Image (tube, rainbow, N blue to C red; front, side, top):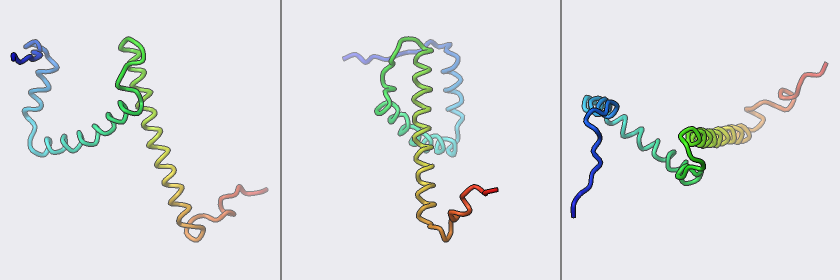
Length: 110
């Protein structure tokens, strides 16, 4: 069976720049990249699995870009909502002895 491969044009400038840059990486940079890649792949998987980024809704680069931006906004809002919820739960767990009392939270009356 014959192997198939996609061969980019030899003068493809972006690919050549990326290959040269990657070849100059040292051990520390490679370790940082591998750690970062593990974190990012989870977010990309979530976007594809749960938020419909696996398929384009409409044709065209501009429409796909809008879909990707909206998906990223949804994921960021989910993270923000989770952080706010955790902050509120931890404030409630502290109780009124360490947190603010009701009188401190109420608006001052004139």
